[in-house]
Length: 459
Ligand SMILES: C[S@@+](CC[C@H](N)C(=O)[O-])C[C@H]1O[C@@H](n2cnc3c(N)ncnc32)[C@H](O)[C@@H]1O
Ligand code: SF4
Image: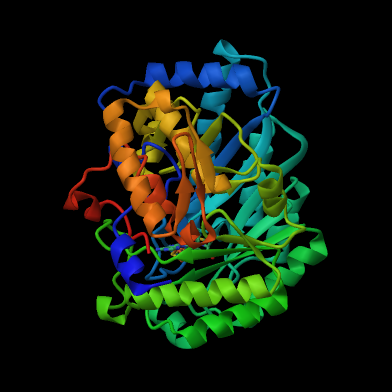
C-alpha cells in the first residue's frame, strides 16, 4: 500500500456500528413513547422468527489499561457487583413487563446474548449466575443460540467459564492486545502468555466451540517485531477467531484513561499501516480469513460460515452471525437497536442506577430512523459485511448521484473499488479503507474539521 494513499485516506471517521452514527442522532425528535412503540412493532414481528439479541454491559475493571476506549469504571471494591446486577434485573423486568402488556407473543426468544464491558469476569460466578437466572426467568433461548462473553485472561476462572457454559455460552473472547513487555508496560497491562494459554485451554476443555483473542495494532512503542512475536504466540494457541483492532486514539473522551503515554510514543500512520499489513499477512498465512473489518476467523468458526452464507451482520456489538431486528442493550451506556430506532442508556453508572431504581427506562438519548436513514444504513451494512452493495439509480436525486459518483470515481481511480450506476464492489486493495468508502454514503458527516473530535482516524 502506498504512503500517498494512506496520507489521503487517513481522516477522522466512524466505525459504523450504527447509521446514523451516535454523534449525529436527532435527539430532539426522539421520545420514549415513540421508542417503545417501535420496539413493540419490531418485537412482535420478529420474536418468533429470528428471536431477539441481548447485550449486557458490565462496566467494572480492577485495573486501568491506558489505551482503553471502552466505557468502564476502575475499582477494586467488589461490593459494587450486587447493586449493579440488581439494577440489570430490574431493567430487564421493566422491558418484559412492558412487552407483556403491549406486544406479543411472549416470552422473548433469545437468539444472541453478549456480556461485554468493562470486564464481565470482574463479577463473581455467583453474581453472573444470579443475573442469568433472572434473565431466563422471563425468556427462552432459541435452538442453537449464539451466546458469547468477554473475559480478562488475568481474572477469568474455570468457575466463570463453567457457569456461563451451563447457561449456553459457547463463545468467549479474551483481551490480549500485545505480548511485548515494553508495549504492555506502556498500556499498563501486565499479562503473561501463560495466563492467556491457561484460560484458552480451560475454555476448550469445558467445551467452548469459539475462543477468540483480541489483538490491537498501533499501540505505543509497538514495532513490526512485536506484532510478529504476538502473532507467533497467538498461532501456537490457535484461537478460532482473532479480532485485530486498529488502536483508536480518542484522548478527548472524558475519563477514558488514554493518558499513560505521549503521542510521540505512538506509531505514525505509515508505521501503523505496516503493522496491520504485517499482521494480516501472518494471519492469512496461518489459515485465517479476514472477515469484514478488524476480524479474522478459521473456516470452522461461525463468523467465517456467516460470511460464506451471506448472513453476516454488524451492530453495536461489532460483527454478528445473523441479523435480528431487536437488540436490547441493558446496563450503563448500552445501546439498543430495533431497526427503526436507536436508544442509548445513561452512561454514568450512578445515573443509570438511579433511573432504574425509580422504575424508569434509563434513557439518555436516541434516534428515530427515517426511511432515508434505513436505505443508507443498508448500503453501509452491505459494504461492511459483504464488500459490495447495490441500489437503483432512482434511489438518488440528481445532485446526490453527482456527489456520490464523484467520490466513487476517486476510489476507483485509486484502485480501491469498481462501480457502475447501480452497484459497487470493493477490491481487496480497498478492504483497509472500508470506513472511508462508507463515509461516501453518509449523509450526516460534516465536510469540515469538526469530525476530528468525534471519531478516531480511519487508518
Ligand atoms: C471490553 S475489552 C475486553 C475484555 C476485558 N476488559 C479485557 O480487557 O480483557 C474489549 C476489547 O476492546 C479493545 N479495545 C479497547 N480499547 C481500544 C482502543 N482504544 N482501540 C482499539 N481497541 C480497543 C481491546 O482489544 C479489548 O480487548
Ligand atoms: S481493556 Fe479491558 S480491562 Fe483494560 S480498562 Fe479496558 S475494559 Fe478494562
